[in-house]
Length: 304
Image (cartoon, rainbow, N blue to C red; front, side):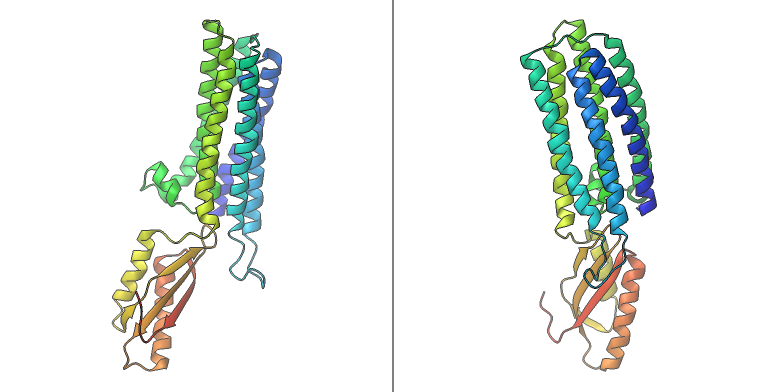
């Protein structure tokens, strides 16, 4: 996905989450609902996370220099990992803490209709943000299921927004159920329990996001389909008698470095081999546009 596509999703999420956070805090303070306060914290964290993702995208687009010859594309992975930590610590941790306090010392929620209205509007806004993010994401990943697409995607900024929005939608439903159960069945601790559940949802989101981002941050290879395409290019080349393992690593969502040991037919001169290497590199980049750097090493004997 392009950086502009990622930004559209993030801008939509920031606008929605900021408005939702303000309304949730107002409703929580006015009615005394722990679940609403937890949801307000959740939305405020999501708003901050969106700003961090925008910062990461901006930093990742800096051109290569002497200290970072392959560019700064991996900056976005670092900031996505920071987002995962914030969701875990601020979102999940505080929500669980608030919930436990209200379970120990239950507080009756007053003017509950205010909470219902705010949560209903929040679901509408979060749903709109989620649809925008999914639409942008599926432009490049429509042939796979959602979970598989997120695991295959190298654009952490986009799937971070989707994970946040999905978690937000589930959290809102839990908050409504908690409020309803507490009010209808006169169970004051239901509000606190809902807050704890929201915290656990956020914690689960953070762990999933951290695992996915970590794989990219420490250097993840191309997907199997792309590797097969490059292998086919080498196999179809009549001048290549043998090749080694194709090694690749992502330096950002759309930047990949590829290296491979190649054994050329011994009857070809060095000049002919050099021309052939240039053509192979061009085919690699044509078939897999994410490939930006190709290193082909000539080998007499290639080990697999």
